[in-house]
Length: 345
View (tube, rainbow, N blue to C red):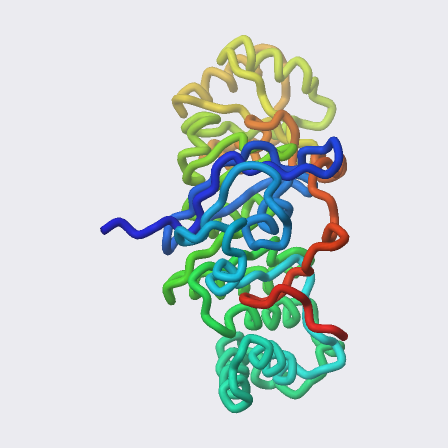
């Protein structure tokens, strides 16, 4: 018998006044995978996740978690999921052990069981030495790990991670990536939202790209990359070189537009056949366009995002379109699995 999808959603809609923050999104997350929802700030990622986690009402469409209807049976859904939001929802005046014990008690564990669960999770996330320290003394990475630990108290089969590495340094991000992989190897399914293209590339088995509330693409990272060519010619022009002329040469030779990446000062040129790189280089030399460096590589998700949306992730993040910050008044705050409200401070 085929296992039910961890998440099955069709035609999801969320409105805030005249704004459609989520606009007719279909989604299927398979059991045992890391599914990445990729998009800039304002794309609608967090709003969609809150709908699936029963934290926002569904205005249109339908969603099921392991076959349980999200709108009709929210209490059953909360028993199947763990949620880690963008900001740690732990009490800074309590220690790490006290926070995990408190969440355990709120989820129905006996005091002794809640304490033993806290010890196990602190060991799992490398926080044993900080067990008795107040959260106000924790670093950002330690807070994120503790927040993720709290979502695993009841070991739910599905974990929602909303931008879990936002604001973390590269080393701590790598540690979080390892932890997420371990969750899946232990039998969990993970739905991960992120605005970091490299994070989706590193972690996700499949990726859904969302922009302005709509799903614009879905597939494995490698499958999405093939949409912008089998290879990419990366050109760094010499100082003073005519970038407009270089783009015109590329268009004439390949019939393809070169994609500018201002932050790195490069031109990325999609190639169906890697050998065509030589044709471009010869044409640029004949046009007297000087090149500082050149390389041929597989396309990145950055290039995929540019090709699909027509803008970079940073541009869309600055625009801030579509994903209202925070919780809508009157809705429950994000919390651990099975708990519909945050612990009162």
